[in-house]
Image (cartoon, rainbow, N blue to C red; front, side, top):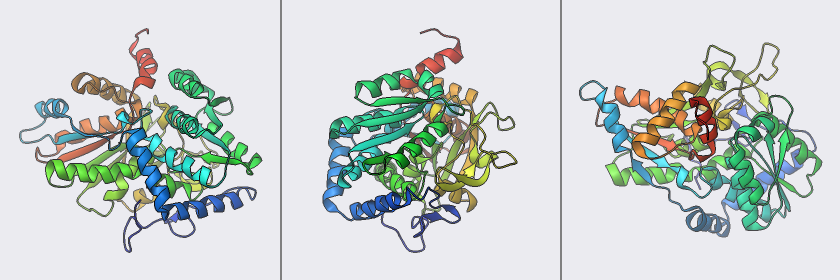
Length: 412
């Protein structure tokens, strides 16, 4: 677990749960005592050696950590062919898709379900978009013998059928949400309503670095195992730190997990990749930082997609996991202070990267991860050959083959 450092970009949040002006706790009075209970329990768990040992044991023997750091040699050579002489950075993948359940989500879920048991909670609820957080939560609940309800937008239920079936096989109840655009935002709304109604026995397992404090910090801390491992692995492979880190950003847990252990290393550039959907100049994207402004949603202040009256607008992405009109508050702060650069990648660019990765590296990435890879395809040729980029390949693409096939005009 990361230790806060004085005069460090890694010391947040403050005692109000804020990163600069972002974050905080904007919740119903009914929930405030429970939020404070979660915070107190998490602070105790951070200092509890037995809790940490059990979480680490599960990461090693159940999840399969550490995940490998893979030198993507064929991709690197492919990009160098079209780059100017002497250009074309070396590309590595942090292979989170090899985790049990196929993505990074399981890292933080296991920590949260252990915490829920420690708190004496007997029922778990979660929200999910692409389904990976839902699958991870259902998996941990099966392992620890807890009932699980997963809220999922009806739109996402339709486009993520494999993950819906996996959740049901694992014993979870999947509740489709039909309000709004029937995507991740709406699923999170229903999850919060359930929590308010069942505070006595229920723990809400949030899948990203958003929501009311302490969730942004807690999920980040659990996911920071990604960056801690990456740091050790790249030093072993190359003898130095990377020049750039790249990761797709929806709510932003996989990106914060990679970025956080490197925030104080000024020589390491960081790129967060938002879903530009059908284009940043359209109204069909999920680029909260590039096209949004500060507001309050789901218990925290952050950058949000909203109209002139402050009403939340619907997000769009080919990727269900990026289809969210907000972003974690720590990302909002890192954007405002200029530590991380946030860019947009559109649906077509992500589809192209999806196919390139599959054919050159024999790795079918999640559409979320393909957005990050598309930025690597742009960035690597502009950097010298002795430079190093690490992409967080946050999930595998099994869940996305039906979506991709549809867009490519193929029938399965």
